[in-house]
Length: 415
Image (cartoon, rainbow, N blue to C red; front, side):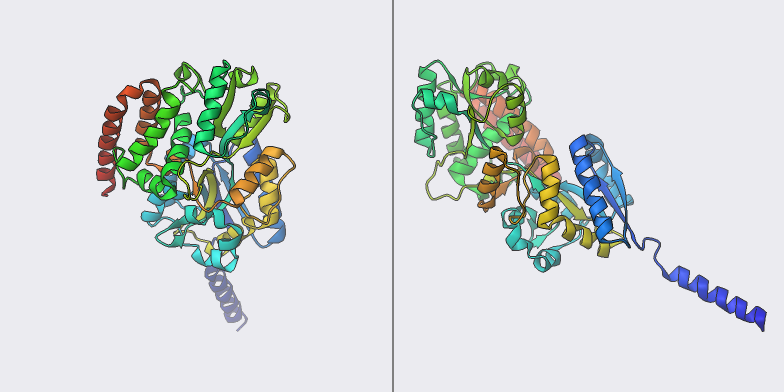
């Protein structure tokens, strides 16, 4: 009898163990933040998450950026983590369309993110559904030498005509109006994005990078008409294709150039080179077409749940935790970037504050040309933009060539 009871107890115990999923309490996260600041930021996030959820243990896999890009499709297909980091908008679209990402529309509604993260809502939406949670971004715009503007009686331009007049006055006084280094061609993508979004609005930017509008389309031609107004008078740094973006900062530091269309990451090297907050300022890219809502480039980093995740319940808890104002504040304080939750707070740094104020009021955020467009199209596009800035007379040939690349990319994607 005793032997029978022991066998029964053992059977019950084994059955009980078999009924517990192997993944219970373990949350697997793949992350590409191997640099010191991102790594430190998320070590702190995970410590706080585990402290708030003592029944959950996070297993964290860190990848370098390039290795992550080449392996993400493989691990999402063959060995999916519960949560993974990636990027918003078109960069997440291939994985969403392949069925590899979990729909988290319910989490956005439950946590009130459609209000607190309204500025990033569109970038996280495909086919009317939300596919992840953003945690950080940074602003693009125009960084400028306040002291040079004041010396030459130039007011901060808010409209295109004022911007052109400022460029003309700076050039008359022997100052290069706009610094840029296009040796790394991505810098041209920022200039193109801003002129295009100010001329045509966000939807045209979105449709172009999605392959729905040709580069020879009259709307895009109009963008280049405005770009001509900067290129043909020589308002950009001479020989810009020989400079990296960092090397092109030197003329600004030396007072030989006055403006740079760039992301907020340019502030640190400009200050390290000697510029002070009294000399360096920031303003929003000016209006071109009246009554078009201003969209901004604000590359947004995100976290998502794998559609094949083993622990979706805890994955949802993690994304909800990451979206809270306190966590967004602490993460971005470490990263030196901007929180997306409008109820988060930012440091006293004037550039961070200016970016937060601008983006919190922005309805449409571009992710930057090379994130929004297909990778092959983006490379061809930015190569073409650089060539156009050197040889504007080749504009039509360049745009026709970009149409051919777009057709090839669309064909590959079955569009």
